[in-house]
Image (tube, rainbow, N blue to C red):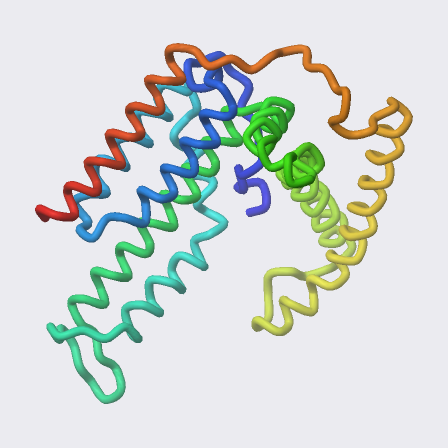
Length: 267
């Protein structure tokens, strides 16, 4: 299950999406997340899903890799859908028995919540799968640089966010190794009720936190040994410049956003 999490992983291939400016991809992600929450009719999710399919095709990222990232969230997805089905009010009653009351509006809302969660994970995974950590840091820093006028630590914030994303796969891999080592020594993480499973996770979390702090210390020492002192006076090997494809990607995303807004008025 831990190996199924794709957020933070980078898929190194050559494609049009990989070559886009990281600033553009971050802006596209923000616009995409806004677009996901706008539809009031499920039919409007069809063009959004088509946009994801097209982006995955142009990025040469296997679509099954995007679906793989949804697998760890299946319990949250099912819980969210079931919770909305049974507890949201509505007028058109489909089933009513004792305290159970299921309405058409609740079912449709639950399905929309599930679709939104899936699309959010896919869009976020596409960003990290098609953007190298260094490029992501540069893009975040450039986008946050105007805030430096009010003494906002743009470079430090971008560095922290990128390191956090980058270390998600590393920590998951470390957790998987610890879990397999403890399972080989007789630890049981699968059987028992919810409380029993939670208690079984304690021996896993302690060495994982120790390993995480050790890695953080090693990273800090490595950066200090290389005379890293933040973004002040720092030069870049690759200067970010927007190209024709970047403007086309922004235009296409703007058209999708406009189509959803217009669709809400007519559907």
